[in-house]
Length: 118
Image (tube, rainbow, N blue to C red; front, side):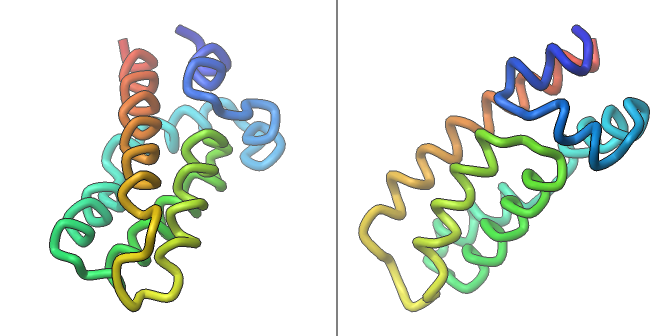
């Protein structure tokens, strides 16, 4: 699978990330490094612990990483969750559903990136 094909599969914007990073070598490096990013697992754990401050931080970090890599589908899902968590005061309506969407898109993204390694 080429890098551009990977971006198509995971709902990313290859042209946008190419404009930003200007090198397919860098795009590949940072896209593969995304597999090691801990923000999703931190977000998931924080929500399980009902620690909404840390959940916001995890969602916000995930959103930023996705924006930098032009992982648009995952960026949009994490952006929506970030906004629900923004006040950090407790469980808001819609958080569980937004987290389900983030999880679904995150898993699809990870699987697509893993295929890039093959």
